[in-house]
Length: 294
Length: 226
Image (tube, rainbow over all chains, first blue to last red):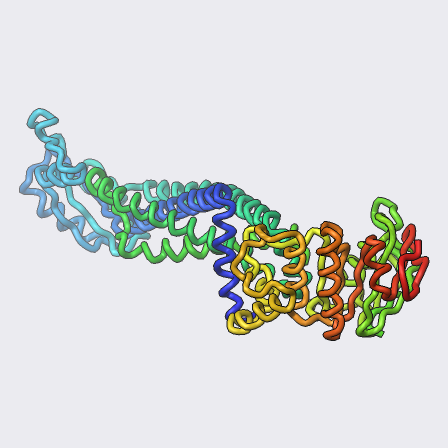
């Protein structure tokens, strides 16, 4: 293939897209929707994954102090906790600090006022373990100490998050496959329409001795253009949604954090453009193999 | 021998026997008419010769090569050495004269500089000099056929096949087109023209192959046989 042949091939591909306006629109729309959903699923999965990992590494044991003991006994209790194997650090959290932390986590709601000026939270020790594998045994040892009422360390919640990630991944993959098939089929149909509309030109090209590559390139390019345009639309929509979702999440659920837009936009763009390109090219190839027997 | 058919038969999937045991030879530089009534097999034979279709049995040889056995690359080369003209012109209606002719050069990947030089030259040759920018649909039937001829000969083919080129033209225009074909033939291109136009065949006094019911029933120099 000679380089200057692209002077014919590139305009030809755009001409064909214009010729089948509605099919072009439908194909781009389907690719955009497919890639939009793909990207959303992927972003959900990586965000839940990252939150789960963060939670896992951040797991702290909360030892709620029996309200019947005097605050003078707290230092001795803290020493007992610090002496347990696997304990890295022990921090005292007063009931006032506890409620103000909670207020922060729920977006600045005045919990005290909501509860009629009462603070039902007990004082507690926040304990970090030397590593996540000993959290459970530390919790058990702390629970046995006199002066400790209850112990919580978010048992099961990390596993639940990982299970949720897995579900999202499975649902996402199924959805992506189904939509991907629809998108590829639509691209193939668009290309087939172009081939039909340009059958006379194709015949003439054959008679004068055009090579297969020369005849097929514009159609392949057409599919790729459909895919890439669809991908760009999807990326713009995804990034806009993600930006607003980030603001919304930060304002409402403070214990969930989203990955920064600046760290993911390039990955989203790369993923979508590559996927769009593959879908477009694949749709073209199917069509060319079926109805352009040169 | 430039074109040779050895015991060629063509039977379509519906059982129609379009050609039966065709043997023929055409030498380089010849001007040959292929005549016969409608349905005699003229178009089928033309399609076999430029490898649009393949023979069911028998062999078609161009320059000694069996065209059924050509690779993709060799087929492309064969087509670059053969031109084809049809009764219905098969032009790209929305395009200009220049674009229609230039298309044949673009398809074989010639440079734009070459296209700009060669298209006006070939249009001059077929009598359409200066008409480059006209839309082909604004031309008369005869002029449209000249555009089709220009497109067929611009790559300097060794052989030009024409399938009923005068079928849609009036007698005067047909006459002019035949003069153009004679000129092309004088320039060294071998011509095989399928026609059922008795007057033209009789007037031109060239070699005439006659098909009847898919069989080659005549091969003489002179006029219409049936």
